[in-house]
Image (cartoon, protein in one colour):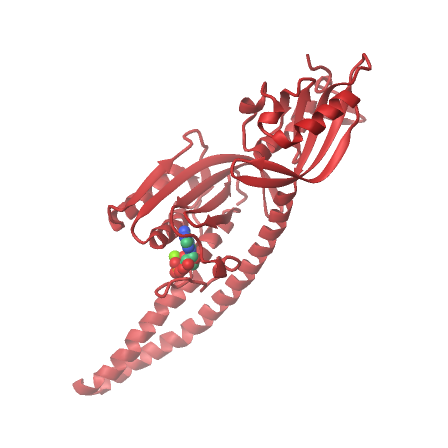
Length: 365
Ligand SMILES: Nc1ncnc2c1ncn2[C@@H]1O[C@H](COP(=O)(O)OP(=O)(O)O)[C@@H](O)[C@H]1O
Ligand SMILES: [Mg+2]
């Protein structure tokens, strides 16, 4: 029996600050905490550890830790036997298909008999994740600065463009039928520029937030796309039906998801599979803010992957890998999601590209 670890009284008071139960504290740590007994069987897992191991507490508790982290078994056995705690920096944790770097501190819980330890507490920090957070922050800052420049430029072009078009229309009235060809060109090109400038400015109307179900958004996008794609593209769904509703602008979110799905369709050149997936993610940090629960909405495709030359600047406006592209789709999608306090990230390799929207369930207005 594994005893004593989380057994503090529920209402313990330190000074005048009432502390919640110890298990509640552990639940809310960003450090992954796993406790194992003297057989190295998992007894406790907090949500941060669930995320690191990509397994639920339900799947882990009662199982040997070696099933989830084979490489660490030997060191843990030693710590149990000797009762010595240890720390390891930048340890490798192999998960299905990929490696994660973690900092690990193992504390031996000494038993009463003095015969080795009764169990171990593992504190795990995902190093990659901290690096990723710093990188996200930087990316979002860059992106926002770029958007401001582009929006400013779009605004500056808009006014003279209106004047130009108006003048061409007046001129047209003075000209004979044979000469109107020239003013038509001016008007047509002005209209084309106007459309581009409008797209560069992004959504201009104020956001109208209501309770939104992500699956309705996915289904809407799916029905729009089914009308556009040929039979070679399979649009599959993988939804978690228990997700709560978001506070968001449904039209804008449809736009964001549509931009991602369109990119997938274009990248796959008419043949392949797209997955629309929804999940919940707990204790997740976006920008500076940690959220208890966020939506993880994914658009995955079996296309050739994002061209390597574009990877660092993919979300910037006017970055495109296609001759007929405008490079605005991802920039606008990121903008929309940022305005919902969320973030879009992606992972890409030939045969599997995933764009993920993280959207917090409780949104500031
Ligand atoms: N799912 C994807 N697979 C491969 N490449 C992608 C994918 N999504 C986006 N890209 C790349 O990112 C570029 C920028 O996309 P976007 O901002 O939507 O602009 P556009 O579609 O007009 O080029 C695309 O041109 C393409 O090269
Ligand atoms: Mg696009």
